[in-house]
Image 1 (cartoon, rainbow, N blue to C red):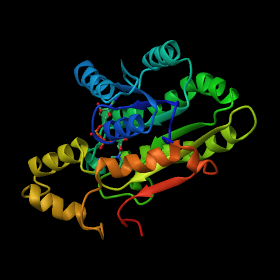
Image 2 (image 1 turned 180 degrees about the vertical axis):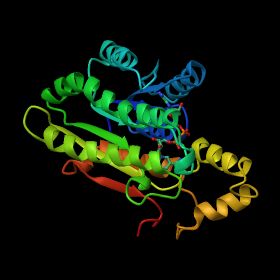
Image 3 (image 1 turned 90 degrees about the vertical axis):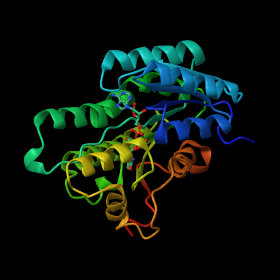
Image 4 (image 1 turned 120 degrees about the vertical axis):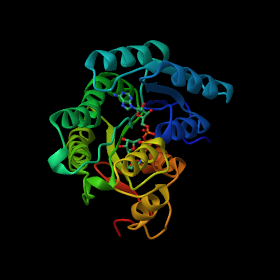
Length: 265
Ligand SMILES: NC(=O)c1ccc[n+]([C@@H]2O[C@H](COP(=O)([O-])OP(=O)(O)OC[C@H]3O[C@@H](n4cnc5c(N)ncnc54)[C@H](O)[C@@H]3O)[C@@H](O)[C@H]2O)c1
């Protein structure tokens, strides 16, 4: 039996990195998958790839920081599938700067996508998720936080703040949604450093701004806190998201689940 047979899953920022790995894995486990992202081209490619693999998949263009855009996504999910079991709030952005150089527009960018995007997602998906859960299926929300929510890395002040806020938002909402009338579990996944474009872009910037001499030096420094000595692969984070979305984790809510190769140990 496939682990998400018949479930409808919505994954934000699902065209690359952790989001794409999650979409592929969930489709493989029998979910009907809705992938969202800002760019239409990569979105259509992901939709086509998932359909070619035999999945029932849909791409909807989306800016997670925009309320109307969220409503449009939820309307599209309802129209196509009539239900929503799983919401993965994965889309996120990263800014790393000394605090003195951090601007208000950096703060607005980070909070609008990493926090407001998660808030809007949970609020606007809720009516359809409640309706689906009413029909006997338990719902699951997985918000992608970070180990930066737990121990703030140097120069990650506003990113850490956004991911910490997502974690506390999750914990509080988990208590509300565990009670009667909801039947929805809410958890965070807290990865350490992952081999994705986000990490690659961050390293490029660190080299360009002289923080590190070259990419090799950046990799060495970034891996220093990781006893396993390597970045996580997006699929390794997706495995945890899948577990939290599946009925195997039916007694888990309000938790923060580390995928960090021992970083915080
Ligand atoms: N890369 C890491 O080392 C790392 C570590 C811990 C947590 N995370 C978190 O994991 C999640 C996924 O990160 P990733 O490394 O796969 O990043 P990525 O940059 O490779 O992919 C992020 C995705 O989010 C999308 N996105 C960004 N802003 C958006 C918006 N406003 N609306 C819709 N989509 C938007 C991007 O287009 C992209 O598809 C993020 O929440 C990130 O903060 C990443």
